[in-house]
Length: 468
Image 1 (cartoon, helix red, strand yellow):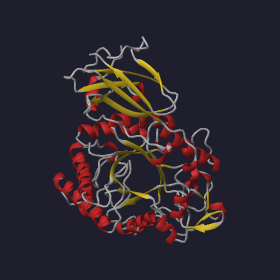
Image 2: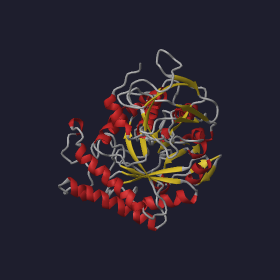
Image 3: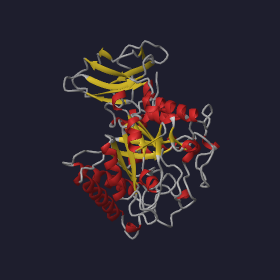
Image 4: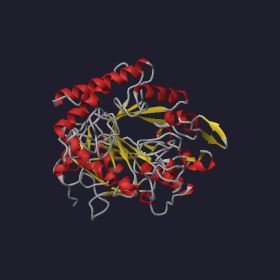
């Protein structure tokens, strides 16, 4: 008999219906192009086959369909990633037919997995309630402004890499400070409410993403967020850089599979990058050095291309719905950051500085022929009228810590839909109560008391008439 942690089950139950997974036609192939305006103002050019091209046109032509753009609150150190700069970028994305993911940092500076500084405009706000109201008002007003100009994004991130508590104070010791989830949930939910309110009657109704850096941090963060009442979002965003992660690509894939089933949300690898060289074009120290390399993926043009193809297949195979490359156009120019002249990322862009910023093959990863998951429908009929919910366990969920809660449909049947790999052998069983007792389907495997099936190459419906 299978044994489960019923406390974890109860946490997950309300979150299940049908986990979103992608088909080839609706997968997001994205690029964060937040630096492009600045790079061009600094004299950067981008080329394909030696011909100078508009970078937005380059990315669209190479198969990208999503542009990610960051938004600082009121930065004093840069004139980019402001609302005016974002307007300019959204117009460029729209002109090429690409959708937009707007990334609210809720900070005047970089917000990331190590720090989340409060904007100066809110530094004197004392209470959580007032701070949440400021977040709501700012989110709502920003999106209403964009919508009035026909620039409403298709996706919105409420925070960037929010591993730490949002809107941190200047005297906080980040390394030793646990998240105050009462405060953090109020802030997150205020941002979410701002997006929902701005969506009413708007030209687009943005999907809402919550974003955590590195796969090993994703599950504990979302468990805590859920317990704190943060549930009204659509997408889970994950950053993955091997340099800063304890997980390899397989570990990333396992996390994607578990959270897409557990929370019934679409999962996007919303930040990743890989170097194509260890050379530099300037004196600004590059962030991705030898410590970011994976075995079998050298810092070469081909190594970068294979990384992007393989990491994308990992996301697809585990039910994710998109991949976004971080700053593929942050090339070297005469301009400076606060840490050096040039770029800290030119060795991880999609443009070869040895060849006058010629497009690299990794940019064409969207054109690769990927192996897509197949739709699988579980349908259970013949259940007594007093039962309104069944509990489906399957090894395809990726964990024994939770089951799928399947409500009775209008036609009296219980239906659960997912997508699985063709040829994959899966084990499952269905129950009519918690704690789990005997399964309702005669097992085909005695050791696990589960039903074993192999996923076909094409849509599959597994129908069962039960007697409970």
